[in-house]
Each structure stands twice: as structure tokens, then as C-alpha cells.
Length: 331
Image (tube, rainbow, N blue to C red; front, side, top):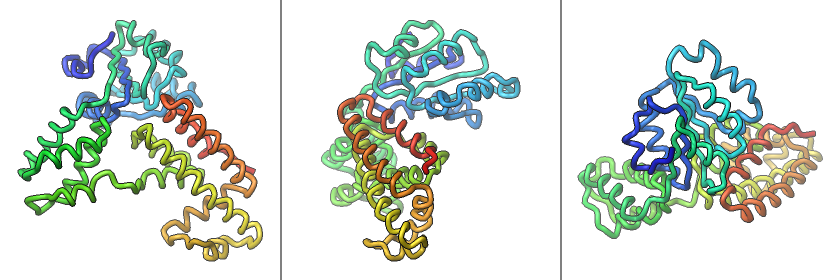
């Protein structure tokens, strides 16, 4: 069953158990999941990454089919869904589980996608494409925000924020949160303030994501991936950050092989490592040998070529690689 994104409001989620949300507008998908689904199920909402399920399929089925699991109605949200999970979904649809609602959150899916075809043809499932928001829609969101805050704003400023959202209302939400913090106890905001506030180059989550991966903190790595909805453009930022931190790790590993002392290795490193990073860097040195770190650098270069070649699937390619490296046991 196919619906337009605006038609999802008409659906009673109690009437269907399976939903596929796909497309580049991650912010709109998150909004629907939050307002239409999560509010209903509240604490009975569980998030999975597709890789978690594929890597331990038996455990996933045991969890959702156990009797204790159905003490209350449950919502399962599966992020970064692809055709790989089609067989599992077919089995779940066939079982007709009444106390379970599953929402698949996928990126762009081509017409020949098997999972898209499954949901479009099934009477028990709903398939909803989410396309980019146009500037008119985004401008309306911005305008309403300032109207509610009773802050005067020019059309030029509204257009600036809308344009920086890159067609995704999740980006609008992020930018407006920055603005909301800035205008506390203020009654106006200047265009110069918006230029400084919005779309900052620094991305803390990207840096933390790579640090957790290199520290072999798989749980936190997966959490960051699940909590953030990176765009295609973000993939390049992530892979470049990965490469920069790996090059630093190679130098550190080489120095450590000589000093055999973590504190001496870190304190003598140039450029200096910020004190807040020291514990994380120590864990990274412990987790990677010099040879393994060198091999990783070559793998990152290969992944960069892949995400450029297969841009429509770049987020999945990169996420798979990061999760794999966060759990790989090195020599």
C-alpha cells in the first residue's frame, strides 16, 4: 500500500503493523515517527540498526517473539533498512503479530528495490516516500518558529535558514534549536547573528563517532549512528575525519612501539593532544597496532571511492564499514 507523506496523518496506526519510510528527507521521517508513533508507544519503543539484526537474527526473533515482550504493545524502529532485511520482514508479516508495530527507516530506494516492492504490494504494510522539502515549506516552518517566539524576522533571514537546511526539515530543526538558545531573554536577532549561528562547520558528533569507532566502543558507535541522520554530504566529512584521525593514530602507534609508554607517547606528540582527548587516544592506541592502523588507512581510501561511486547508497556503505571496524579484533 502506497501513501503520500501528507496522507500518513489519515492512517490509524492501529490498523497496520508494518511501515516503510524511505527517501532523503530524514527530518520529515523523524517528525512522523516522533509525533505519530513514539507518542503512542512512549517507553515501549525500541531502536535497531539493520546490521544489528542481520548479525544476530536469532537473537532478534527471540526478543520480539518472546511472551514477555508482549506485555504491552511495542514499536520497533529499524534504521538504515535495505533489501538485505526483506526475508526477515516477509517472515514477520506472515506471522501477523498483533501487538507489534515495525517502522523501517530507509534512505533512497530505487524502483527495483525488493523491500520497496514488498511494502507497495502488501495489503498489511504501508509504504511512504519522503521527498525533499521545498523552500516554501521550510520557510513556513521558520516563519512559524519566529512568530511563536514573538521575534521580528526579515524575509532575507528566513530564506537564509531555509536554504541552509538543504531540503531536510531535520536540518531546520537543528538550526532553529541553535537560534532558540541564542535568543533566550532577547527580543531580536540580526542577520549577522544567524550567519554565525547556522550551519557551523564543526560537527562534534562526527568527531565523537570516529573516536568511538577507533576506541572499539561498538555500542556507543551504533548509538551515535542511530541518533544522527547524516546526509550524503556528511559522508565525505565523516570519511575525511576518519582518515585524519587514522593518520594521527598511525604516528602515535609508531611512537608507542618505541617508547612502550602511553603517557610519554601522548605528551610528546606534535601537534599537542588536547587533555580531554587523552583517555580516548590511549584507548585507540591500545586497540590498534601500527600495522593494523596502516591497513585501516588503505581501507578508508577504498571506502571513499565506493561512496563516491555509489552515492545513493553511501550512508549504508559507510555505516557498515564503521560498525565493522568498531568491533573488529585486531592483532
